[in-house]
Amino acid sequence: MSETDIEDVSNHNRRVHKLVLTGGPCSGKTTGQARLSTFFENIGWKVYRVPETATHLLSGGVEFSQMDPEQVEEFQEDLLLCMIQTEETFFRLAKRCSQNCLVICDRGTMDARAYMSEESWDRVLKRNALNAVELRDNRYDQVVHLVTAANGAEDFYNTEDNPTRKEGLELARQRDQATGEAWIGHPYLEIIDNSTDFDTKLKRLIMAVCLKVDIDVGDRLAERSKKVKFVVAKMPSDIMFPSYQDFHVVHEYLISANPNIQLRLRMRGQGNTYSYQYTIRQVRANNQVVELRRQITHRDYLNLLAQRDHSHYTVHKKRRCFLWRNLYFQLDMYLPPCSPKCEGLILLETYTTLKSRDVRLPPFLEVIKDATGDPEFSMFNLSRSHPSASTLMAYGGFQFTNVNVNVNNNNNNNNGTSNSNGN
Image 1 (spheres, rainbow, N blue to C red):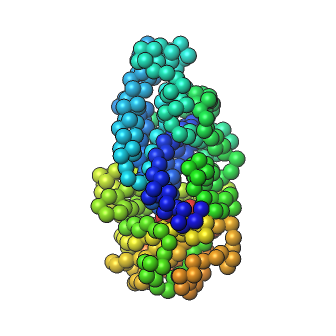
Image 2 (image 1 turned 60 degrees about the horizontal axis):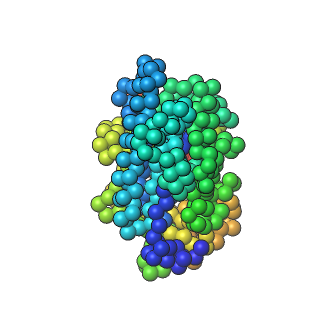
Image 3 (image 1 turned 30 degrees about the horizontal axis):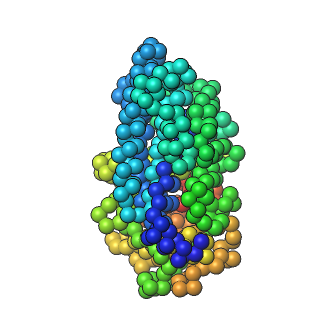
């Protein structure tokens, strides 16, 4: 798809894509939703995220073990009706949006079916004049089921990330299977299993959605795709670029007591509208680095800022996102106030299966250095107030140094790095 084609789709053939992101416990839904949001926002789509109704209600003290079958049925009925009403609110917003719009539903109507008997489900539908075919097949454009880590990635299964998650491995597998079976029959059901590492699993998720909405992303999301990075001499005139989207991005590093865990906040937006994200990057088994992302509220963002790591500068960027020859590029211009070494710095990034020297770069950009894999150009190190060679984190691969952590001095070095998009 050419730059002209992309612009034509955005301006003249506006579309709304209703996506259900479902799966078993600890399947990567939360991080997957954040990655999808960043990807589609970068190419000019409006993204609405419908919150998970079950988590909202269960966090209020509901305990299924304390409920009889009749109470469970009533609760699931209320959950279903609440979900439908919430979704309709976002669907109406999307319908009136002037941009291409992706609506990500954190679970959908048929997820309720997975926690009910067939007889109970039929009674709920009859009482509310609902039809299973309408709820499953016609309500959403696509359903993507992320398989629980309890099935194929057991070392990574945990219940710590979600206070309402209490399932052991076997129960998690059962609920994952029941959830998947509830959606059988939907014309566009995708299953993303754990046959690859976590980062690649999320790339497969994004690729599945891109294919459904006919977005050509080249090899950016291929299994062996890696980040390449270049230093650009100066910013060319805007008219030199193909269709692009500009964003204001602010990063804040937070204090971490674990040298293998890096905590970061991101504020990103256009005009007066911002989204907020909390990122945890950590080293796990076999030196695999996993990046967990969660959309947060403005209030959460302000509260977490109290944990800011003052050994790092706040990072301010103007980010320009654009497509060139089927590669998706991000051009970051570091803005003041910033570290002295970031003054005037412009970095170009993309993901590809090619080696950095073989990438066909936009001819309107004057590239002066290949910074791929250079720890000097990692955002963590660029933001440091007092960097030193002994504490630089490796970047672009799974290389980590042993660092003594002094929590009292607020000088924590967090060594998790990963090849992931959407900094």
